[in-house]
Image (cartoon, rainbow, N blue to C red):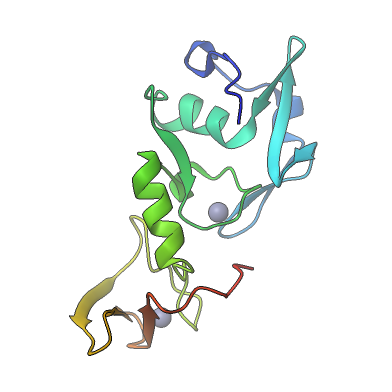
Length: 155
Ligand SMILES: [Zn+2]
Ligand SMILES: [Zn+2]
């Protein structure tokens, strides 16, 4: 994937017509404008920027060279800075493997991010794997992840 040399950190603020295209739900901020490959794009002075990198750079923290801006919620067109973090590419890939990081418990409580309240435990299984349980402390539901789970597609 070619990296466009866009300077996200030089953008000071996002114009009204940017926010016109953002549908802020209770959790994700969904981009309703141009989408390419699942990711929102926004045109500034003739250049197409990635929307989630813009909100990260403008609202949260400067983009760090060499890191990717990762969606904790797995919703590509979400640009809620609370759902974003900067990660190395390998951390990002690892998360994809674990996959399916269910972002919310069955009752819709966040399992990741600053508002989550969880207990995560892991144990080795007899077959070369590892089971990871995430307990939602709001409702005590348990999500189990196992690295044998690979086929599920995040919604
Ligand atoms: Zn989101
Ligand atoms: Zn819960």
